[in-house]
Image (cartoon, rainbow, N blue to C red; front, side):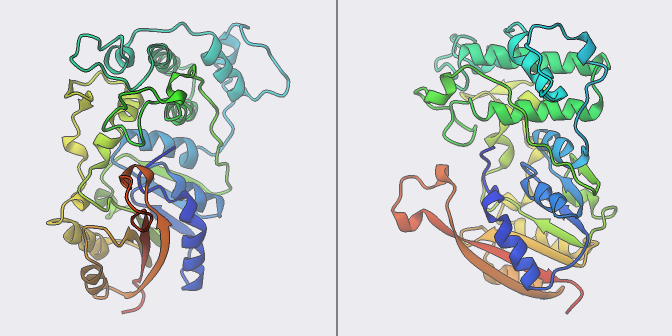
Length: 357
C-alpha cells in the first residue's frame, strides 16, 4: 500500500543501524503503525510485537498481519458458499473465499458508490472521481458481504480482519489518486478503470505473538512494556486521517457524515500532536519520560517540524543519543516536480539508549 512515510524500503538499514549500535531485545512496540510494515518486519525477525495507530484502517492491517498467526481456514463459511468458482486442490481456503467475492456477489449501490463514484455524485458541482462506477459498486458489495459473514458468525474475528486487510490493500490499487486520498484526480488513471479484484495478502505467520491497538499510543505508556519503542510520527502539519479518509470509511463502513469536495469524514478525534510545531517536541518528551523500554528509536527527517538540535538536546536528558542519517527519495506526491536535488530527503534515525545517561 502506498503510504506517506512508509518505511518498507528502509527497514534493512534501520535494522542494521540497530545492530551496529548494540540495540538488543526480544520485544518491540511499533508506536505509529500505519500499514504495519515495520511491525511485520520485526515479527518476522522473531520479536514479540506490539503495534498501535489511531486509524481503524491501520488496526485492520495490524490485526491481519500482527495479531493473526495462522492461515485462515473458514471452516464455518466454506460449506455455505455455492460452487460458482472453479475449485482446485491447490487453492487455499482464503483463495476460495476471495474467488467467491470476486465472482459471486452482485454489485451494490451502497455508501461508497453513492459518495465516491461519478454516477453516485453526479448531483455535485464536481462529481467525485475516486472510483469508477463499477468498482465502487463492487467494493460496496464485497464490504457488505464481509460484514454479513461476520455478524452471522460465519467467519472468526481473525478471518474477518484478514478479509478486511485484503480489501483495503486491493482498493489502494484501483483508486484514482496521485498518492493520498485528500484529493482525487480529474482525469482517470488507467489503473483506476480496470475491473476491481480483491487480492490475497501475504500473511505474516511467526513463532511469536503480536498485540494490536486502535488508540492514541500515548495512552498505552502505562501498560505496554517492550525492550524497544519505535516511533515514526508525522513530520509536518499534514494529518494522516484526511489523507486516508476513503480507506478509513471502507474499513469502518459506518456511513459517516461527509463534507467538502472530496467527501471528507470528521477526523477531529484522530489528530496527532506531532503535526503542530507548538506541541510536537513536548509530546515526544512526554513519551520519553514515560516509556517502559530500554531503547527508543525515532524515525524522522531533516525537513521535519521539530529541529534536529532541539530533538538531540531533549533526548540527551534521558539517555545516550545517537543520530544515524541516510539519503532517501522523497515521497512521490510531495516532490511537486521540483529539481532532482529537491526530490531527496535525509532520513534520520535517533537512537536513545535509556540505560545510559
